[in-house]
Length: 146
Image (cartoon, rainbow, N blue to C red; front, side, top):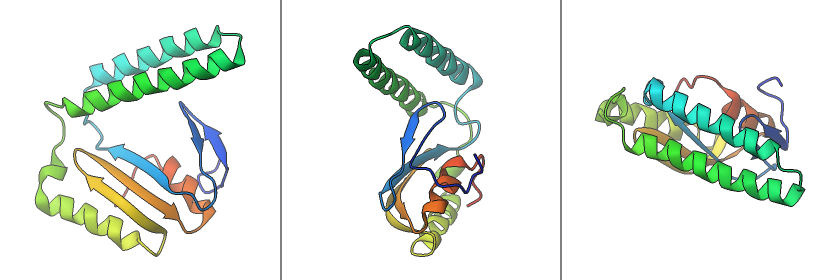
């Protein structure tokens, strides 16, 4: 799917719903912020979960299993980020964090209506895109140039 094509629903590893006019939440991290062995472990766990879920015939049980698997995987990603002991720490530099913050704020009212954001070792942004075509653009970019 081209990055600027709007879709109400799409799925990569997890399902994404983006109704027009809805507040979207994105999170991203600096490349290298999670060690390779942590990424490999998380990807292996995701594959194991997918194999187990694919063996469930009952649609309701499958839906429940997907929900719980997503919570488990998300929790492990979050834990990995909370327990960082290496990797890039650029956002700890007030000057760099300020540049990121200004870039986020600069897009407010131009490309989106900014609800909230948080800059830590990972960045969280809550916003409403002004154009539905922009929603997928933000969510599909492989790199973010702030």
